[in-house]
Image (tube, rainbow, N blue to C red):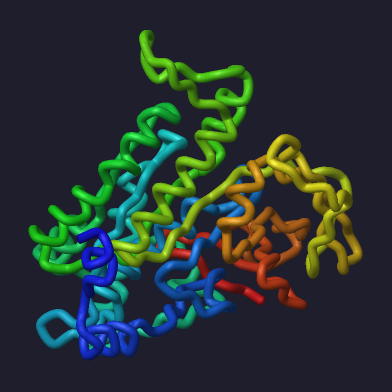
Length: 340
């Protein structure tokens, strides 16, 4: 019986071919637009605070929850669910709603088509919203596709991951669409607290204890199992501490001895006139799980000497895969815009 259960099919060849042919690369908005991404990829957005990491998640979320078309108007979205897990406990849902309203108003004001390409100076100074209405029914439908969970410690995070399959299954039955994005804001939020504890008790009478390493292993294992049942693109932000040496083109590890017991590996990005290093503090099990990594940080440009005097300028650089250039971008109420 065990052997028969093992060879039991989950889907027919026709269903498999139909599923695989439908899985196309996702071309996201800047600054994630340089690399084609697929469901099942794990993208780490690393950078110091503030560097617009959460804003990048918001822009990707708006792209996912918007419909491709609504009442004859082309919005160009994916019309799928977003599961957002807030570990930083600072996410402002108002920022998401404002960004979504801007996108809806932009589309309503451009007639029948919206361009996802970014302009150098959209809406002039960007200090005033366009005087255009938006479809409130569509706005409510999009916001319902955004699923939000807040966790205050590693135990809540692990409990969330273990029950996420049932949440997503219930959401799919309710909304009629699947989740495409799993977003984790500040994956290292509990790292230092967990590291300071020699062991974490599950409960007072439990014989099992969770160490920092076992927490990371369980997180990766649960996400990996979840992706097998619910294929999604994982977007995780991570705060980093930058040193006094920087780079903009490639990452070199100064130590080749990477182990789960010594996760604080000094990395240096080299290739530019400036050099800046940062420590990779996450355990190796997480580092190995990540398939793509992008570094974002504040640019050294003086805003007073540019045409974006009222806006901070940020740099984005792909570390995995390593690209030979970086993008400069600014953040407006309407989203993230590449300026060079």
